[in-house]
Amino acid sequence: MNILAIDTSSLVATVAVMNEEKLIGEYTINSPMTHSQKLMPIIDELLRGIELSMEDIDFIAISRGPGSFTGIRIGIATAKGLAHSRDIPIIGVSSLEALAYNITYSRELICPIMDARRNQVYTGVYKWVEHKLINVVDEAPLSIGELMDKLKEREEKVIFLGDGLNRYKNDIVNILGDKALFAPLYVNMQRASSVAQLALDKINDDKVNTQSYLNIVPIYLRKSEAERQYEEKMKRCSEKNE
Image 1 (cartoon, one colour):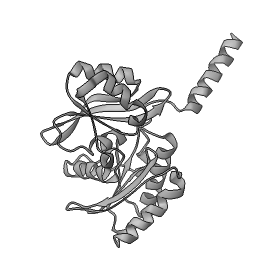
Image 2 (image 1 turned 180 degrees about the vertical axis):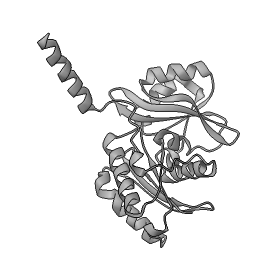
Image 3 (image 1 turned 45 degrees about the vertical axis):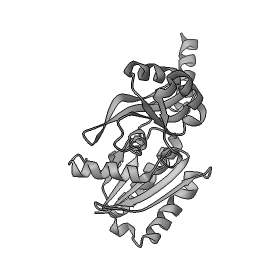
């Protein structure tokens, strides 16, 4: 059973192929190129490098978000296109959960933070309990202050990772002090191998939703800028007409 995993929820484009026994291959690019330019080429190159084709793929695992709206849409559209052509089931996972999964079997809390702009981060808090990664603080867009308040209540050490550290690491240290730990660079970004492992866990736990790939939808957590602007415009028009 081969799983092709894709994550384009951030600047990073990452794909991997995994089966029940091993990670067969993984390709990760952290560059400013758009996902529409690089995603299909790295999928093709990975499959050629491990001497497999889409005919050998049994499941596609896709990161549904939250994260970059455009990146998420490109990833899901690509996964749906590949699935449609060969009737391959798709398994959707949270990008935050997959990022947290980079830190395996830690005793500390794990807090992925992705820069959501507008002075917010996409975040959640996770913990390993009996070899299972459990969500202990719901995923949400929060200000760094709101997140710190939630973490201070728990009075535990926390491992942070994700691109939100580029902006907020100093704030975190100032507030949490020695309770704040930070992941090393090689696990500080999205890894498709974690997406694949989460999908494999779902398969093994018999938690796979085998409905049509058409039902895979993004996890945005908040409205897009275009949606907000449209609602504000409609509100102003309504107020003028009153």
